[in-house]
Image 1 (tube, rainbow, N blue to C red):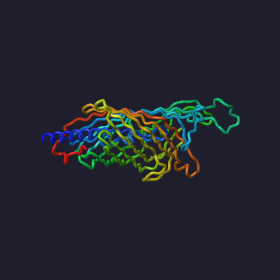
Image 2: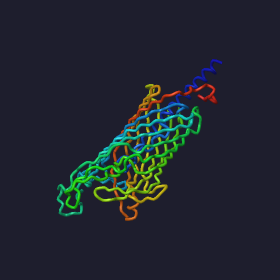
Image 3: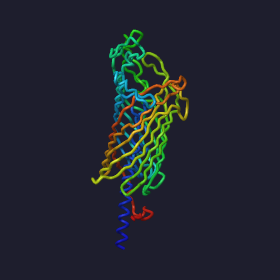
Image 4: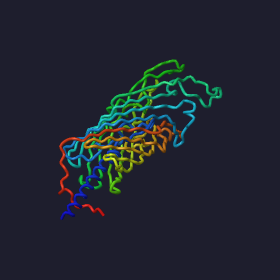
Length: 392
């Protein structure tokens, strides 16, 4: 009898441990996916639609996440155009994101959330403020300074708000679980933000106010629908595999914006992200290490609607190490995805004219998040565990 109770308690402890690790793994895997640089995946792309874990009925979860990247390396396809940095004509984007996410457990499986993103972007370039050197101009001397000046434009404010629902397919006492999510993205972010451009006009002698580059607009200009799938599965007693798939559908095709003194049509593109990794507990109680890979990008063609208007489609594949520390109802996490492949693919106009535009990417990005769970939630009851766990 005593031996049976002992094994049952061990089984219960193992269940609780695996569920905790699994929930933390989902927290890692389902938050903070977004592009790095001119391939402008917006803040919150791939953020978990149910707030980063399994919420019980009447539970709340409040999360905040800070992200930063510095993009400056230009790619045309997979080829890096190193001369841009060497000659000083590279475009530099410094982007800061601060997201606030509130989630509520409608039931033990169904939860709802709202995400409020704030952004600040700074974009430094020469081609937008007078021009880059003409490589084909034989009169341009080596290291000669051309008419353009390196200047910066910036944007800031509220980005696109997201509302979502997610549903876990299995009970919270299940070892593995899979969640399906749907949501809407509101065009709350300003997609016509303006700043000052220098050296404009035929004589490069005008200073004007005009729309900033698409990559640093706080919003993308369209209502969107989000689809997401996430889940986790224990591989061993202390290693949990987790994954996440995300897709944003933007039906609106394009909008017109005045930029640098002329009107131009800009696309409202779809976005996608996928992530796969594993989480394991370290000897320090509550400390987990994460390792995985992910891909995120903008397709050249949308699922719904047309593809006209300017966009910089492409993708980034990254290796992602991270750490997470949890104590009671609070979790802190840090991840630093490092790019191993960057590809600026052809957009609609590129394909029509048989050309290939470029885009700037970052080497890495930094994610730092804090999550707090609170509210009235039931405790796991012994009779909710359907079967004892085989410890052999």
